[in-house]
Image 1 (tube, rainbow, N blue to C red):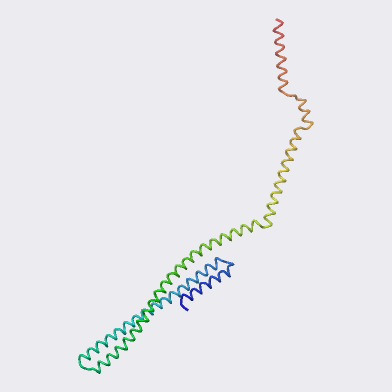
Image 2: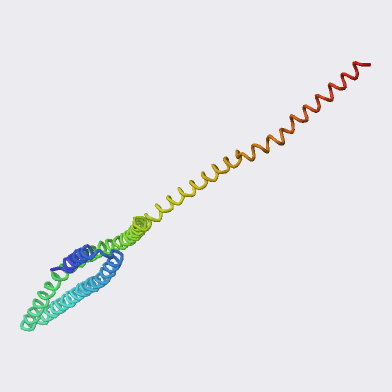
Length: 227
């Protein structure tokens, strides 16, 4: 199983754990992002190790290629000197070194291709985890808002609150009733028998003044006529 297959399984496992333990989404979201970052660090370490291996293979390939070229030069020198046995031995050493160099070259090329894929996949993983971090913040905000709304609704739906509001309405009705009774008593008091007699005894002040004025005017007219 590759590094990223293991990481993918771990990611899915963590997501399933969050869903199963969603009693506290905020806590679980923070935990899963923290775990993902920890695991991403481990993956980076493994990728770095793969890169180091690729570099070592390249160095080995270069080393044995240089070795093969060295023995090739020695074989040519032995031929020039007329020493066929020495030339034969040098060619045998060159062949061994070249075979080894070719083997390391094949491994290096495969490792280089693998490292390139690992780097590309690692970049995508980092992007996904960054996206998960952003989603975590959004989900936490939504979770907190939902909790606040839930608490408000629970408070409003409590029996005590309903009774208190109903009692408030009943008390308001009683106050209204008392105000109506007070107004009615006020009207009755203003029209009592004693008040009616007082009105008769005092008489309307304006009518008395009018009658007095008329009498004065009549006397004046009679006096003027007798002259």
